[in-house]
Length: 340
Image 1 (cartoon, rainbow, N blue to C red):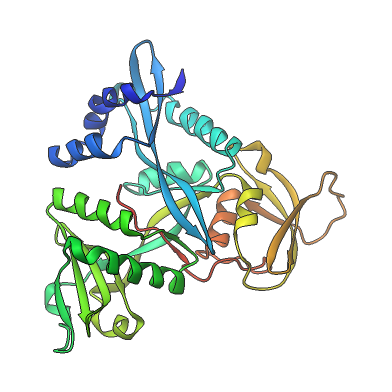
Image 2 (image 1 turned 45 degrees about the horizontal axis):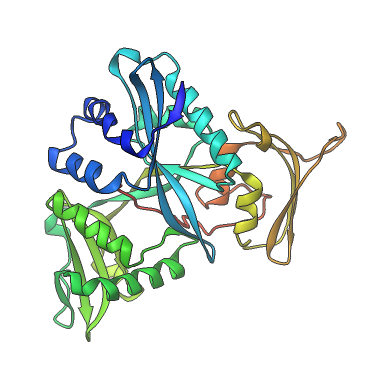
């Protein structure tokens, strides 16, 4: 039976979590279960009194175009080692995604732990939408000039830091986490548990950049465009990092702003959410994307694009642009560099 745990039941999932994520430190696991479970949802597949699989849904505030939306981040996907390869997780995702559709969630996202899991998620309609750069070796990191101050951020810096970060998100990206004061409070709390810190650049008393450090690696780097080409400590080579999935297609379409004109007819195939399947006429109207389902598509229609829901997701978020479809996000316009 698949169900969502009640608030008083959530701590009962810890044994399964620790079995599936032995690499997490006790300090981190304590922090997660004591501080971050409240307000989240945990779906479980239960047999008798045993949780055989589970996944966590963490609400996040995300800026989609110009709108602030609550998006569910899928985290902690796990199955008891004795019950793997039995189809439990596919049933879990099918139920959870169907529930999200009914709740009009526009999309969801997940950060796979490796390519094996990424391939599983692709079969469920997910697609990569964001790459991540690795940290340069220390000897290749250019130091700031004498006009810049570099130091660890303190709690008193977080208001200014959130203002700088959100301004950059709005300037550089179409889809990003809302980097408000609450975001940075939680990030600072989390990385202190893990032995990390936030480094900031200050010029003339103004914050012009920051890095979030964890395990001697840059978890996130955001720099003013005047610094980015010279002081970035990230390698130019990128690796796939975050995956997303359209959930309620019509709701997502109403949230985004279109970058160009155009129209097309597309046939969408969704392996999980039946309502997203069909042939649609896509057109731009006053800077917004209009989506009309063709209830009886004629066989004589020419130029129909045959797309999976994953391919459409990658296009909408600017990861793999499909020629002939109106462009939504800029290239690599998705920036949700999440942790938990």
